[in-house]
Structure formats: structure tokens, C-alpha cells
Length: 141
Image (tube, rainbow, N blue to C red):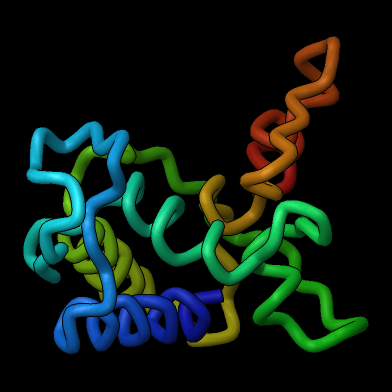
């Protein structure tokens, strides 16, 4: 939901501010491994590797949405987001906020964002296109 996107934005921003996020050894960013990740530079790659995958253990994996959504609460996705994992997370969320403002999106309205909707430890794309979580999300948006 828009509220959940805002919550992870605020959480990641705080983690960056206090210096708890550093670039991994296998960074795609070209940044020095183990150097501090700045809020203005963090991408979805680092949000995934340094936040989501550090909070959700591989042995008990699930999607981020499953972690932050109350048990039994389901939302139909209203919007499907296509994006680049290499853009800054700050810019990504700003784009979502602009869309929300222009389209009068309520905090309870759901956006489908692969990083948060898919289990990042077990990406299952299916054998046929119709089994792909992307296909299903597009059909439902």
C-alpha cells in the first residue's frame, strides 16, 4: 500500500542516516564495499540486499509485504509499478508520491512492486508466462 511504501521509505532513510547500511562486497554500484550508503544514493539493489534480505531469513523466507501486512489482511493491487533497480530509491518513492498526488491515491491503495511483492530468496517466475507473478499482477491492476 502507499502507507507501506512510505513506511519502508522512512525506515530506510533512518537506517542510512544513522550509518547502519553499508555497500556489500558484491556491490553493483561501483561504490567501495563496506562504505556507508547515503540516502541520496541507495538503490533498490541495496534496499533488497541490505534491508529486506537481512531482516527476512532465507530459511523462513517470504515477501516484504507478508512481513508488514497484518495476518489475514489482503489488498487488491490498484497499480503495477515498473522501474529500474538502479535508480535511487529516493527518486523511486518520489515518483510514487507524485503519482499518488496526481491520482488521489489513498494510503490504503496497493501498488504492486516486485521487490516487495515477491519472496526475494525464492523468485518463482513459473514455466508459462501466465504463471509469472508479473503477469498476474498486471492482470489484477
